[in-house]
Length: 223
Image (cartoon, rainbow, N blue to C red; front, side, top):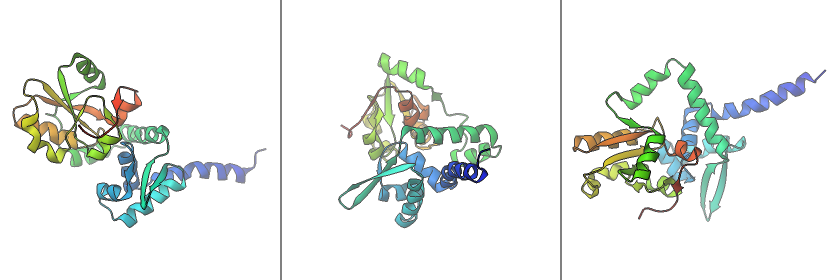
C-alpha cells in the first residue's frame, strides 16, 4: 500500500503552484509577463505596487518555478519560465469564466459596457493581414511590443494614440490589440478611433493567444 504521508506531500507539492497564484497581484504579474520579459521597476508600475511589494510577489512565483530571472548589471529582469505557465494562466481564466458566477459582474465593473465594441477573431484578422486591407496597431507599452508583436503591426501605445491619429491612413480599417481579453487598452483605442470617424475593431483577445497559435510574429523596437 502506498505511503499516505508521501502521497500527502506530493499533492501538497502540486498545491504550492496554486498557492503561489492565489493572489490577484501575482496573477496580474503573470498576465503582464505573458507579453514578454520585464524589469522589476516596470512591473511595479504596471501592477500599482511598490518595488518591494512587487519583488516579494515575484519571489513567491519564482519559488515554485513559475518565473525566471536575468541580471543585467544592477537590473533584474523577470520572464515566465515556459509557455506552459502562460497556458496555465489562460486555463485558470477559462475555468473562472465558466464556473465563477460573479466573474461577469467583476469584468463589467472593470471593462465597462462592451456591447457596442466590435471585435475581430484571430482567423479573420489573419485573412485580412494576408489580403493587405487592414492596419494593425499594437497599443501595449513599447517594451511589450519590442519583446514580441503581431507581424506587421505598428506600435502606438494607447497614451500616444490621440497625438498620432493624423499619421494613420483614413482609407483602411484599423484593428487594435493589446494583452488579452481583459485588457482595456484596445477597447480605449477603438472607442477613440470611432469617435474620430475611423473604422476600427479590437482583436477578440491579444498577443499571447496569437503567439500560442504560432501565427506570424516579430521582435524588435518600433520603426
